[in-house]
Image 1 (tube, rainbow, N blue to C red):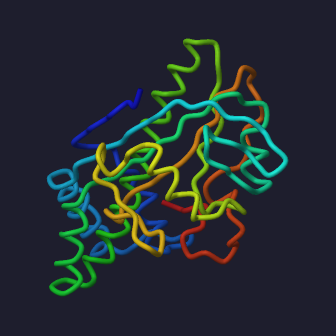
Image 2 (image 1 turned 30 degrees about the vertical axis):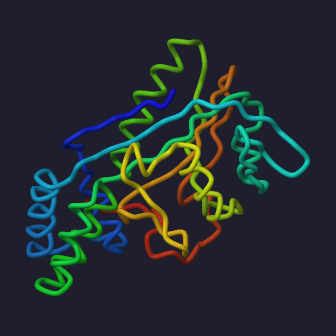
Length: 226
């Protein structure tokens, strides 16, 4: 059975917005901070956070991890899901109104558009973090443990896996998320991922920036002095 979640607001970490803006170690000036606060307020009015989740069996094969009938190739996802017999597949989005607002701002207020884009990226990740935290509590109530979420495109897991993952979830119906031919999710501020469910509390494998091989990425997490 697919679980459907919908929320109007999430708590967006200020430090994450600043990281997405590319700052490394320094706090933005007052004008930028004022725009950050304005974008967060606007997101609270226009965002429509939706997610869907499916609990599915997984198995290790010679070619990779089999998530129900989807093959997940690569060594990184194999390490992440090693020892798990089940996993959550999920997709989440900040909604289409955010995309529409960004399209308008790119022509009318390019600076604000840049900051809104960063705030929306931080927002959908915060939504995922909140969902994952609540699902971890559910798992603990069953005497089980969750691995860190792992998205197509991380490490050596191909981005093309996203197509089958969204089909499995019927994400277009449940959340409005669709996929372009170039594997870009629409709405753009969307995430798809897999979370392993384990019988034992294992060492957490790397996820997100730590699992990705792009060491020179502008958005890679680093410490901020705030």
